[in-house]
Amino acid sequence: MKRRFRLTRSIDFKRVRTEGKSYSHPLVVLVASAAEQTELRVGVSTGYALGGAVQRNRARRLLREAVRPLVEQMPSGWEIVLIARKPLLGAGFLEIKAAVQGLFLRAGLGIQEQ
RNA sequence: CAGGCUGGCCGGACGGUCGCGGUUCCGCGCAAGCGGGAUCGAGGAAAGUCCGCACUCCACAGAGCACGGUGCCGGGGAAAUCCCGGGGCGGAGCAAUCUGCCGGAUAGGGCCACAGAAAACAAACAGCCCGUUAUGGGUCAUGGUGAAAAGGUGGUGUAAGAGACCACCGGCGCGCGCAGCAAUGUGCGCGGCCUGGUAACCCCCGCCGGGAGCAAGGUCAAGCAGGGACAAGAAGCUGCUCGUUUCGUUUGAGUCCCGGGUCGACUGCCCAGAGAGAUGACCGUCCAGGCGCGCCAGCGCUGGACAGAAUGCGGCUUAUAGACCGGCCUGAGGC
RNA sequence: CGGGGCGUGGCUCAGCCCGGUAGAGCGCACGGUUCGGGUCCGUGAGGCCCCCGGUUCAAAUCCGGGCGCCCCGA
Image (cartoon, rainbow, N blue to C red; front, side, top):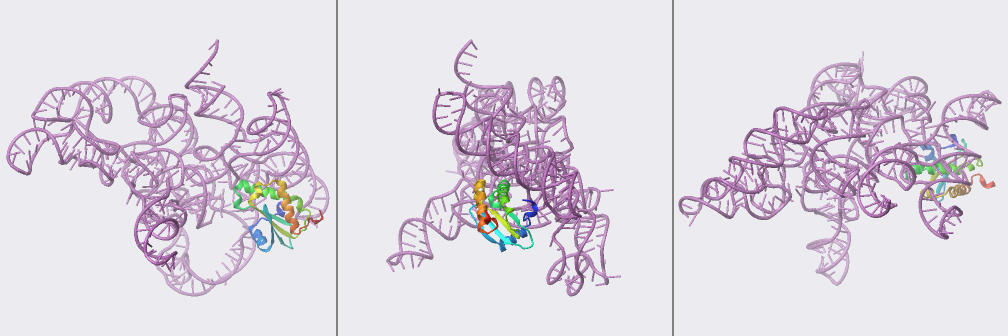
């Protein structure tokens, strides 16, 4: 995922989390918010409760990799935040991928045709 | 062979498919950009931020005090609460080896609980001795406490005793010789016969230290609106004094209150580089490890320690599965 | 990046500067008071003073290192 499709600033994260709708899973939480003027933008939040820098980096990379194949099939005009939960570090990549896919389906974003 | 000590070194490897960040090249496009190629892309500790530098600003960084750090010797080093080697005094271990401390206790002050007669210019509770008769004097060998009781043993001496005196031993100081670059070690002589511990308590002595930190700082861009009260000093490195510089004293520095504007870009900054931050996913083979099966060869399953650069560098400290190489010690056995 | 503070019974804190006895309130247990409970009164238990080294005769206290938590400035 290129940098310009990411959410970076903390104001963006705050806006999505207050205005958006959230869908939760034991491994991960998805928050989606409609934003008409932009293209699809995704941010990953890995909080301090996950552990040190190694654990947070790993969680972020796993979630990015899980989202990557889904992004191309989705409509633009959404801002999405993924929040990692602690059990994510113990899970395998395929579990995480399935969890993220399920959350996108529940949020009604784009991948129904599969 | 078993157990242990110690120094060094590595800290998964190779390949494929997809993906990420930087630089650069090519093609297409007016442009935003799109497609493709090349190349580089986390650690020994990147960590804790405990020291020291570089660098930047504050005045080319000033003086004194305060405050803080540091403290055996030699060498290395830009420097350091750094490294290497050595010395002294301790501690652990059979040993190899590991480990703590290092100026001054006659410059001064403080403290040393409980116990004990007494805890530091010695004193005198019991005791002993002498004189007197219920008190004066001499004395600390004897006593028990304590972490520690003002040298030890033997003798001379005495009323009783005592370094009061003598011999040897121990310790301290001074002088000289020898070894060593030195710390220091060692030998001889002399001296007073002899001086508790604690400076990781205050302190004294020598040496060192101006302050802040890359959110330092620099360049550019954008934007705005002043008003009121107090006011003679204010600010420039923390505390004080001095010195000095700048701004200011009714054309008003500064402080407080109300109100308004901005919170961007580039640079500093890197042969990894920056922006809240790029190294990941899957598959295969192998190396090392664990478990199970097997007489062996081997087979199957499992599964990678601590941990992620944010201006750079030199150290220290802390975390760390396992692998490799070298040296040494102890024990047992063989030749 | 820099600076500061805290860690002591179950809880909230004293004690640390200037080293020798670890204490207060609440809570807890037992007994009394009451017909019973609360209140009240009395008695009592409970702490390797965050961890590891060191200085000292002796360390919660002094020194060094580590761990955890909190706060402040840019």
